[in-house]
Image (tube, rainbow, N blue to C red; front, side, top):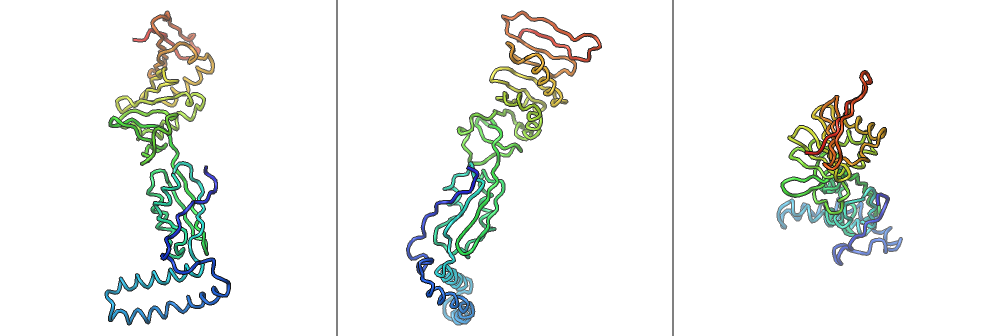
Length: 297
């Protein structure tokens, strides 16, 4: 679901945060909040004294900071709810683990910018927006990568988006309905392939595989059986020509093995051996494309 949802967070272990946060009475909060204003100057004085007796400055500052955050959490400024929007593929548990979130953590110790960087390191996440809404709410909006195809490489399979980037950690077996792309440089040309195919959506829906031939051009497999050979240059025009011919004469509904579009003025259709081949040409001056039907060899 891409809609708004609530992340289920583990609770902070007892002793990790003093007090009971929201369970404090209104009178207790009234006492705690003024104390928070007094904490920084008192901490500065105490910290100066500790420098003479207790050790290095960084360690002391860390202790002071942790104490201040714990005090703010006791006053009700802690992580209570995390709202998530835009998630479809990234597992919720992975998000919680990546951010190290626990219900009850001091919300002032939570850095939205650090959280954004951690989320965008996840394979599915293209962009993340994180905001902190006091006193106790975090809101996360994700823009995830759209799975485009399965890329066969090095004897294995990986999922890629329309830009040809691998979606790290994605399970290929959950996207077996996507077309297969084969070839050393196939993923790098995925974007231009998407643009070409999308121009003829009805025909694009029938593409089950795209094989990059010689790092120069594409062979497309339609309906798992018909091979369409596209030219090295002018592939979009050839693709549009095939779509037009299929609309006019239901070319792909025939018993066809392959269609060769590599010649700009000729269409070569290969059929099984048990079908008699024939030659068809457009009338002179008709502006059409000559069609040759031959046995598959």
